[in-house]
Length: 350
Image (cartoon, rainbow, N blue to C red; front, top):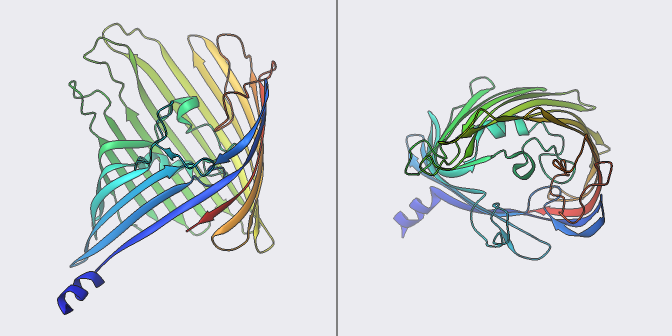
């Protein structure tokens, strides 16, 4: 019994999560309203654990699943009609941690994404978020799977992380991911840089697909009365495969944001995002303005409200334009290419 107690004292498992739901209203070609989940923070359920192996070495694991508070279904993060099961698609890793840093195996957010997405004033969540990292609207992949990840120790504010994701296809390079992220955090100053490459799946070189190459950088400075944030991101999608031509698509985004405390419990958020997509000489431009407020009722519970306006330029029948992050397809865009969104809700972390 004594030996068992000593062993258990060296390890721990933590259950954690976020439950977030609110009312969403969208106005575009039509009006849409309903209760939606994950508007301020993505709703999730997770387990993380650590075991002390001695001599500064620790074993770690993290399993995290997304779910929808509005109807109780799971969320796989794949999209489509079958996206309803509770699976650990947000994070699924096991690894070792020590003075050398941390090595993990499995599925995880990439270091490149983590290094720069934090400069979105709305945390890449809800209708106020930038579309820079939105997989549906821009095709960007914020996670990699079948991967090996390394995160370095903190060197006077500097950290580096990298991932290699095996495509696990007949052609070794298909669906392969390679990425790196570097960060610097020192007092009020924060900087981040990320570069990554995701190969398409050519299916034995007989079907067209696209290779995606991305680089992005950002930074923030906290003045106390307010924090200023900004970033720039560019992704290039190039056709690959036996019959691929020289066609490529570029998607560029830059964003500016500010967050400011209000009293002891509130925070105001505001951001501006500009988007530019070019494909075969055609260019789509869009601008987005977002304003939000979060009021903390306690350390774990908060009320929030977000308004966002998106306007597409040179919208036409062949290119319907961008929509707000998480917007329901039933809302669509107005004839002028605009869409308004409003979210009000509550979130609780445990």
